[in-house]
Amino acid sequence: MLQQKQISYGKLSGMIYDFPEINDILPMHTHGDADVHITIVARGSFRAHGDGWDMTAKTGDVLDWQPRQQHEFIALEPNSRIVNIIKGVA
Image (cartoon, rainbow, N blue to C red; front, top):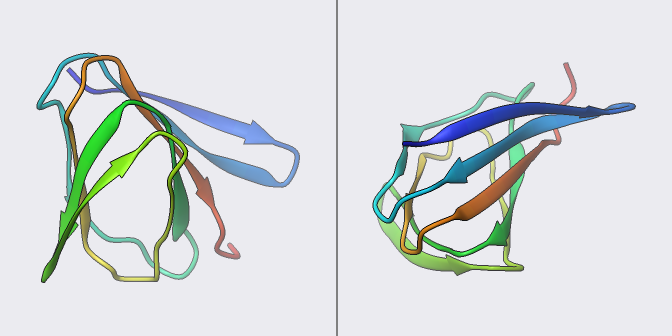
């Protein structure tokens, strides 16, 4: 089951998501201008997809989201992790 932890380092904030099992999912969602983020695949691999696109994201990949861009993550390996860093201005 998906696990999450909020992170804060000075002016940086975000979330760490751990996916213990294959097929654990971070459901489809979007972000606004204030909470749009980048995603860093810290370990493992994922199927990442949204409206009209689909990709495999692997350890070391960085995904740069735009406001209101739909995205969902499905773990392809056990013990996978993504780190989201907020890039918007609150």
